[in-house]
Length: 74
Image (cartoon, rainbow, N blue to C red; front, side, top):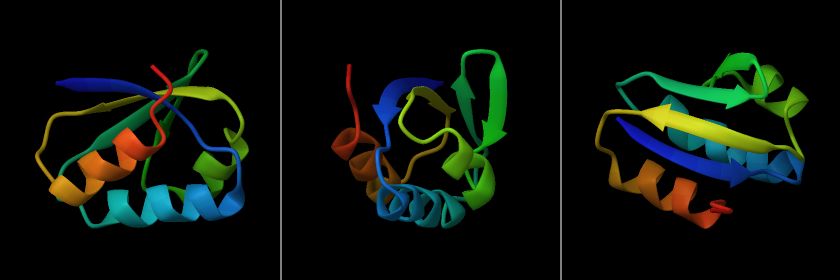
């Protein structure tokens, strides 16, 4: 299981992240405080914008890994 902390500050960043997540054939969970969201939900992710988010996933996808790395804060 991979775990990264990211931050999405603008709606276009959320759109890019969700678009990459939607192309993955594995589950991706995002946690903010005690709220769990499916990373493939644009509205859910939009509501968490501008917070540090923990992303959990266990699959392999080069494009998604690069998007996560792009927005990583730690």
